[in-house]
Amino acid sequence: MILLLNLSIIIIILVNIIMLMSSLLSKKMMWDREKCSPFECGFDPKCLPRIPFSLHFFLITMIFLIFDIEIALILPMIISFKMTNFILWWKISSFFIIILLIGLYHEWNQNMLNWII
Image 1 (cartoon, rainbow, N blue to C red):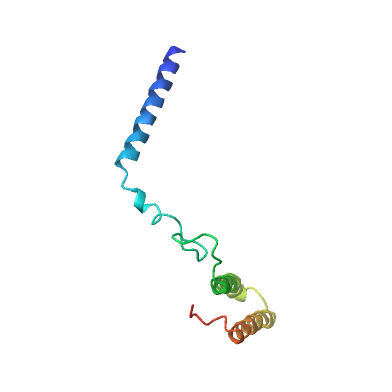
Image 2 (cartoon, rainbow, N blue to C red; image 1 turned 45 degrees about the horizontal axis):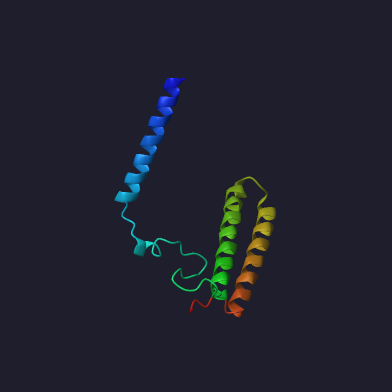
């Protein structure tokens, strides 16, 4: 029992020494705190946090997600080409691609693809 108590005290002391050494030897300084903060959702960490972010940033994110999901759905279609009836595969694939092209045309008409911020 005493051996276990001694070992736990030694471990606690070693952990505290290592934490103290890492904080003293760390390269992070107070003026680097803002530089190390995350930059997400279009917010600048050096401005006021209540400034609304650009709606254009949100639209670009949504377009990226749509086309990312499109790729994830088209790849299994290509793999399943050999396993299914060609006519059925052609109808399903063309219907899916037509829906995506209509969405792309709508985004083009709404000027969502304009990358000027």
